[in-house]
Every structure is written in structure tokens, then in C-alpha cells.
Image 1 (cartoon, one colour):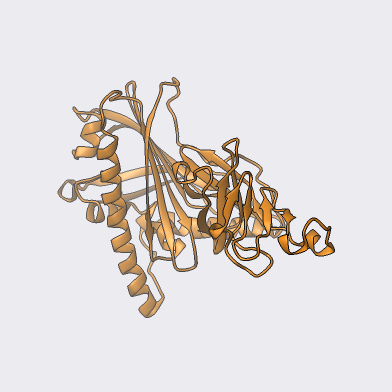
Image 2 (cartoon, rainbow, N blue to C red):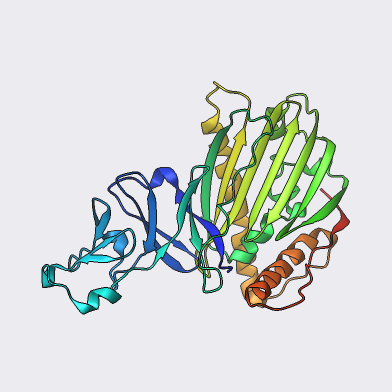
Amino acid sequence: MLEGFWYIAGESTAIKVGRSFASVLCNQPLVLFRDGQGRVHALEDRCPHKGVPLSSARQEGDSLRCPFHGWRFISSGECVEVPAIGNVAHPSLASACVKTFPAEEQDGWVWVYIGNDRCPKPSSPPPSLPVPADGSPMISVRESAEAKVRWDFAVDSLMDPAHVPFVHNNYFRRREAARKKEKVFTRLPLGFRTISQNVLLPDTFIFRALSPRLGSATTTVDFVLPGIHLERWEIGTRFASVMLVATPLTDERSRFDICVGWNFLHGLPVGWLVRRTLRTILGQDRYILELQEQGFGQKGSMLLNLESDTLAVWYRRLKRYRLDQLAGVPNLQHPVPEKTTLSWIT
């Protein structure tokens, strides 16, 4: 897992005023709550007194009261009340703080920053869904799915082109229509990008919704650490984009968080259908990755030696590169070429 990044803790609509919300990111249990002004706060989900999860606490105004002994904590993590000692100041209260984490809302998600000693505070806002250059309004839909799979496998699936015609047949590709593709990749500071112009869209129901006549499109696909796939399609004035995130929960569990947006079909109630489709697609990934986890546990090795596996190799090298950056290793070389062409059949 990588520290020093924003991660999705949950949907904004799930965190309601007056009710605490439990989450976990990078093996770190969290409790989230909204204050009276609607701002979201994230704290370690543990009372420092005897360890009871604060997600079981009662929210009182802009504070959480532990149900065990009534200790009360405000959004800064400071303990402001211990009923057992009344209003008397006690030296132990100075060390009775709960760890806090930066939290922000973006695109209908609550993002929490998981830092460390070298990067305790975020240097940039959370990632965002790509939007059209003309500023036209977007409709967006979100969906999530947990999987019993290690995080690296979940991230791999975000950039694995060869699995699409098999795992997602008839959704993004039709297996019988597979053909050779060449993609030019360029380097990003902590990732890589490919842009394809005048691309004929695949004949599937998803792309017919984007362009009924399956016109040519300009597509841009980015992968950036820690595990974020950003994709956008432009066909004339029509624009659609996807942000798909692999979120690390624990060593054994990950979650896929996806947000899809589009600037057309305004006024038509298609959100429910999009969400249902996303749920199916994420379920397909969960099924195959849990099978991969099962098989990997028997032997613990993989062959990443095909050209279509190059992106997974780059991801692993980017992780090492970032860890070395944080450790202050000098004279690092970026692991992704400035520009290169890869090919595969999908």
C-alpha cells in the first residue's frame, strides 16, 4: 500500500449529519462524521482510553461521545470532556487526542488523505472526474464493490487491456471483433497516458449510448498512482468520462469505486440503468479477481511477459519509484519511457 495519497472513504450521501460512519483505508480504521456546517471530518476509529471504536459513538453537535465512559472528542481530535473527572483539568487529557486525517469531498465521494512522516499533509486536492473543455454540465453516477483480493491485483485490472473481451464481453468489447491495436504511451509524473484519435467505437450497447451511429472518437486514458484509471471520450459535442479507483482497505480486501459522467441525454432518467450496468461490470471484475487470488495463493507467482502486461510492470516500478522518492533516494530514473508504442489484440 502507498501512503501520501488521497483515497475514497465512501460516498458523500452515506455520511449524514448526526450519524458516524465507519470506514477503513490502508489497514487504518476510520470514523467519519459531518459537523453542523456540513463539513466532513475523519478520525482514527478508536477511543484512546480503552480502544472502543468511535464509529459506535453518539454524535453530539460537532463532537463524538464514546459509549464506554463518555469521553467526548471534537473534530480536531482533542478530548474536551471526561465525565469521570468532571470539569477538573487532568494532565492525561493532553495525550488523549485522537489522530485526525484530512478529508474533502469531490465528485460525490469523500476522500481521506493517508499520510506519513515524509508527507503528512496533502500537496494537492483529491483527484477529479474529467470534464468537457467547453464547461457543459455533466450528469454523474457512482458505484462501489468490495472484493476479497489484494490491492495490487485490483490495480492491475484497471490497466489490463487483454481481459476486457473475456471478462466484460459485449460491454466494452465483443470477443469476435477483436483486432490488433497499437497505442502510443507517454509518461506522466506518477503514471502514463495514451491518446487515440479518430477511433471507431466498438459495437456494444455502452458505446451505442455514447454515439448511436458509432462515430469516430478521441479517447484519452490515464493511469496515475496510487491506483486511478481516468478515461474520456469525445465525439463532436458529446463527452463522457470515467474515473475508476482501486481502493486499498486491508491486506486482504480492496474496493472498486467508479464514477461515470456525461454531458448529453439531459432530462432522461437513465441514471438507474447506468448504475445497474456499473454494478454488473464491477461484479465481473470481483468474480475473476477473487479466482485469481485463490489460484495465486496456491503458488504465489505470475508471468508478466507479454506486451499487454507492460502496464502492470510499469505500475509495480512506479510504486518502487514513489517509495524511493519518499525515502530520499538520489538520482532516480522514471520507470516509464518518455514515449513508446505497445500493441495487443483486443
